[in-house]
Length: 111
Image (tube, rainbow, N blue to C red):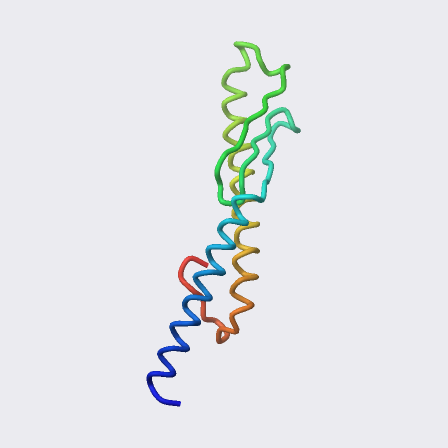
């Protein structure tokens, strides 16, 4: 195999990897996760890429004296959703990487 053939194969492999990465990113934008806090009194829905879709706060929390607690619960629910999104994203990216037959320990940037 000469250098031109090797470069052509490397280019084709790079294009395949880029395509798989784009498909995975699109898939992550479709997967939803839900973070909760306060036993479900506050819920945050997000995509696996971390985009917030919605926030739901139980009516029982809608009292002026509960303001600080609601703020804390929203932050906690957001962090829970973010953790779940990161976990799902990592799993999906790992699947892509496994299909690439990379040498053990080698990771692509962003994975």
